[in-house]
Length: 94
Image (cartoon, rainbow, N blue to C red; front, side, top):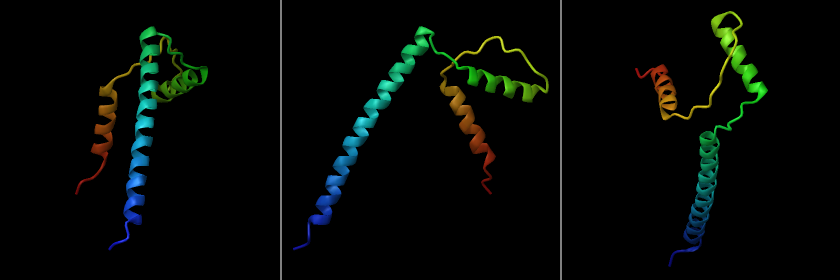
């Protein structure tokens, strides 16, 4: 008869991992819900450091200092998709 201990240990580890994944999924859902509430309430605050970084990036791109009038937090899947397309297009296939 084979030793069942390694198989039992593996099954216990899989059960533990499933429980952990369930916990993490719940936490991510809570965080996403909180972000959705903040975005819909219009209370998404952008810190001074972030504004300075945006200002520096715009100035570097344009070559001259620019006045930033408005910054909005936008949640869009299109933005992420365009980023992924750029990454995929940068890889050489041949």
